[in-house]
Length: 208
Image (cartoon, rainbow, N blue to C red; front, side):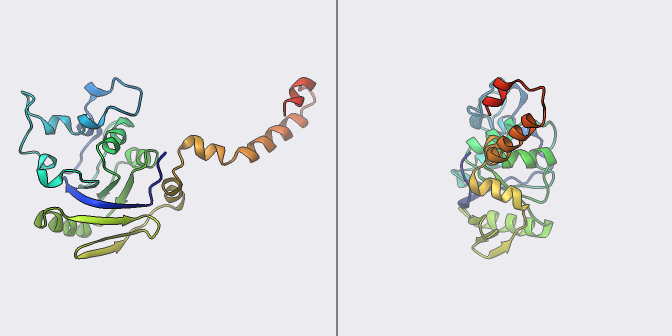
């Protein structure tokens, strides 16, 4: 998994509450088992009209948000089903940080498995950021996970994050990598397990 230590770039404002995973990546696109190929379908039902043309009324279709890597949104982002395709689509679309007052628990945890940093903000801080983004085209932020800080024109604050989740992102550790970090302890336990059980065949003991 790709490491995440510092993200600097444009902020896209999605001023919507209770955005669920079926809105993030609609169910008709969940036909792949790979983690790739979902980015182009992010917010598909909002992004396009029924005739397939681009919906000019959808916030993120505005040219001012082109190439944004930070997503600012509202309460309960990522609710609904537990599909991990949602963070896959968000990550492939180029977003590395999501700022919101609250997240659905499963979506929140899935972000850390996909090199995305979800940051929980107070409602006042969220409103302040929406004002700055909407009033200043091309508004950008620097998010520093090492320092646990967010800075930009007219704003600077720190954020809280679980130490283990922070380590996962900083070191780029997926579930397998986390297990391999304990490889020596696992091997030690396996040897002890075998040696304490007389019924284990000698040939199996030799493999340890």
